[in-house]
Structure formats: C-alpha cells, structure tokens
Amino acid sequence: VAMERRARAEGKVVACPRMNDDVSELDPRIWEPGVVPEPQGRLAPEPPADAPPCPLADIDLVVVPAVALDPRGARIGYG
Image 1 (cartoon, rainbow, N blue to C red):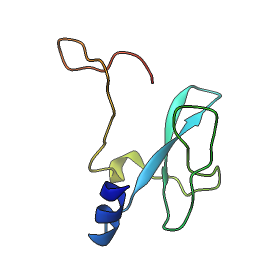
Image 2 (cartoon, helix red, strand yellow):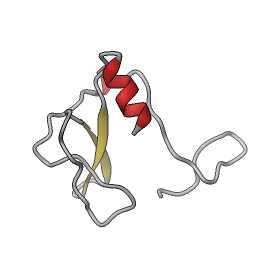
Image 3 (cartoon, rainbow, N blue to C red):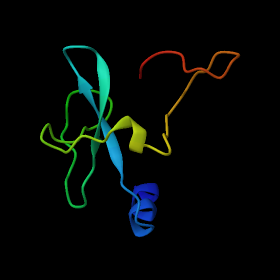
Image 4 (cartoon, rainbow, N blue to C red):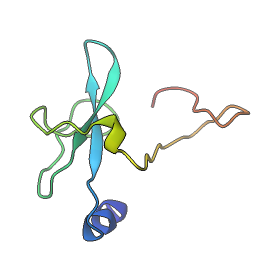
C-alpha cells in the first residue's frame, strides 16, 4: 500500500492484475484512486471487472512476489 501511495503521489498510473479465467492469464487493469479491489477467492484481491485495461506497453515496472526461485531467478509456482 505504501508503494501504491508513493507511485500515485509521483503521478504514476497504478495497475493490478485480474485473472482471466477463460485463458488463465493475468489481465492488467488500472487501479483507480478510491477503488477497493474485490475479493476473488484467490491469494489477493483483484480490481473490479469494469476497471479500465492497462496496455502492456504502458507498464514500466512490475512487482512480483516470489517465495521460491529457480537458479535463473524465475519464479516457481503461481501463488
């Protein structure tokens, strides 16, 4: 949350992923100020389904939590 607040204070667009059930891919959506992510029964809340999409080309930084990494630094698992 602190990172999200700082990014907004610097004028950056904040996006969060929604899980796209039909293709099992993440769908980045803009997290607008004041919008509370919805619980989805997964590990983390997601932006509402009607949140504006965030084109991949507009993303400058991705923060990915990782508990386990392989020797190349790639994440192991999906959670």
